[in-house]
Image (cartoon, rainbow, N blue to C red):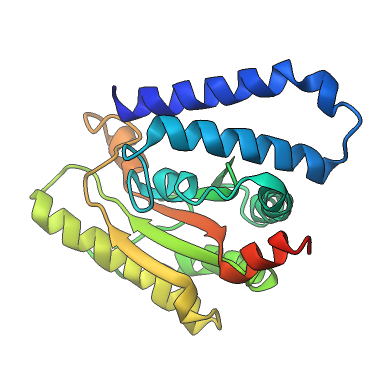
Length: 229
């Protein structure tokens, strides 16, 4: 089964299970609902996806899905991630902010984070947009963030792999320079992998030249959530 099919199937099953239990959760509070969904969703996603998608696999989506906690703690974490996702969306409207499970997948295309041609140097526009993220990341310090760099398919694959790694590193270094804690970040260059658009057109290649963030709970957030904080 293809990865994409597995993801769709997993979420379809989660959605179906949640809907069939709607009467039971009608009168619960937000955290309780999140806990129920977290427990069911974590079990179904974990059982179906197995090794197909885990930490570090399939870019930001895989990293987020690989970090499922579930239960009451998952509900608490989900609520915190809801708030952070809304703030990111407000701070940087051009970004693609996707709440997945108990984390956030954030995609910054060339309209948000642009690099000079064939270089890993951040442009002035890119720095200005990252500054907006710094404010949100500072407000929510208890998260781990993996930064994935991507390129289009023009040029040699090994060269693009290194370029994507260098660009992801440039983003990380800039965020650290702005005061964020270095240990929160991990970088991975994926080069031409995981295209989100066709590489046969200029528009498609532009979309594939992007940076993705996987934002998940760190140990402190998990421990606090397990204590009900």
